[in-house]
Amino acid sequence: MKKHYQILIIGGGTGGIMTAAKLLRENKNLDIAIIEPADKHYYQPAWTLVGAGTFDYKKTEKVWLQLFLRM
Image (cartoon, rainbow, N blue to C red; front, side, top):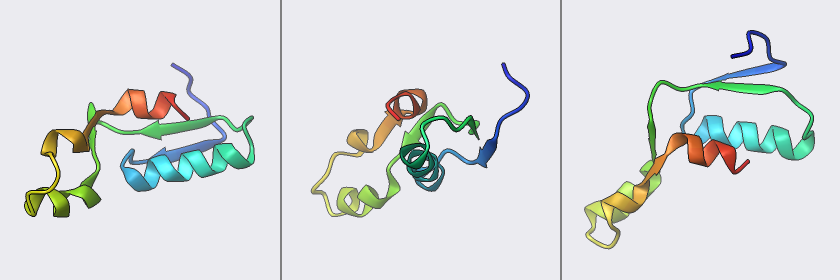
């Protein structure tokens, strides 16, 4: 694992992932690391729909690494 990056993002939630994606869209050559201890990411905005019974909870769960590798 590398020890030095141009940008370090703390937290791989929606905000961290979106920040990294936006930065990479602007400059694909950036060297970005995200620190995230969880194995899975939950799309929390959809939880309102889960609570209303219109969305399946399991669809809010993604393997975190798969999300990041798509960027």
